[in-house]
Image (cartoon, rainbow, N blue to C red; front, side):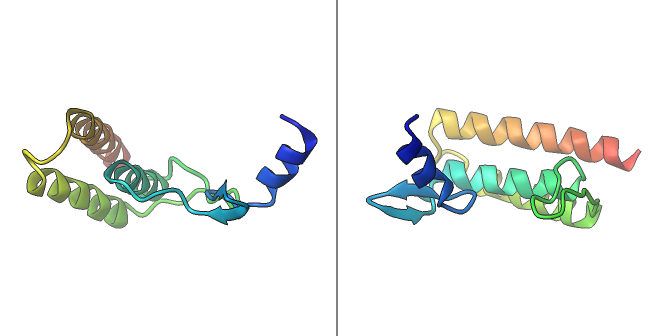
Length: 105
């Protein structure tokens, strides 16, 4: 990576990408929605640090709410997802449910 490319990349806030000389958020897709909810649940389970403070916290009520939201999406989109989307959602849900059970024990 050239120094110019490095400087351009660093000028965008975290989570943004550089397109056409501007810093923009990535395209919204079903996959990015699932990954966003997954990140939120992991944060509330205490498995991810707050990027600003570096601290972790735990809010199992919010974690369960996010997991329930993902389950609702799975139920309501049944038969309307690509194979990869269905697989991703299934894996994310299974992982989060296991983490939630472990956090409650």
